Length: 363
Image 1 (tube, one colour):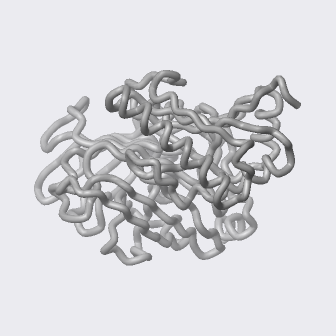
Image 2 (cartoon, helix red, strand yellow; image 1 turned 180 degrees about the vertical axis):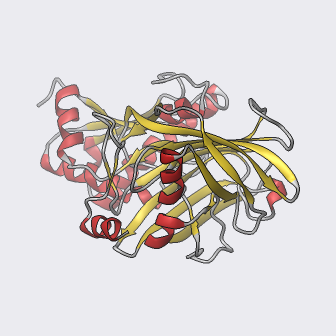
């Protein structure tokens, strides 16, 4: 734990695969952001003020010290009454809990304390992962939300070798190595099957994906709910986006987030907007902001949503960063230019994006 604290404090703690060559490294620093796609059609049974159905939540690392990692979670979705939810929730994860806690709280709720002692959030503890590595089994408990029942049991590793997990890393599709585990966990006399893909890292585990089945089911099971990390963004040198726009004349902008089914820019997009503004300040380029969506909804709806989101980015650059309006245009293409299949939640997340395009016939 002394080593972990020192690494966190120095800003050198990184997410990468243990013993996996060429695995991407992800710095655990302020601004590191995870987009999680959630499929939870039965969330209404969990109580009030809880998002239901298909939605995304954005979890950002807002502070990193030797003692803790602070998360800020943004949830914009529909609640159990089909009313709009717009929540910002802070969670503080003490370093000792990241090392040793056996209980993971999956969800974030406004009634929770900022610190839930003895628990983790985005992944299991180092102790759980260590047991899975060394013995192939680990004692583990989980709650969907802190106020709900605890499910407990033994997780078992399915394969000795990591399996690839595809995720968007700063807008590029990469593969992270994951430990595949499963267990039939018990709560209130009931047993349900759970499956997890965990980031194979000895210092900061992440639940890359989990899925849970119905009461009494075995393996394989009928999906009851699932969640997976579909995007990971972290601060990069501005010249990364700049070089791509200079060479390819088109670049996808990482770190832009919108509220659920709306064109409202999430506050966690500030760093990305500032980066675009700085880039345009250094160059005389005129650019078009393009919006793209997945195929959920009608063609007309998606065309309109993508147009409004692109316009929102353009307007923010003009209003808040003083970029000349004559240098900016916006356009929406809806679902017509997918990058990946829309048949998976990861693919749909990949297709929801904003791109900058410049006219390469001009300097």
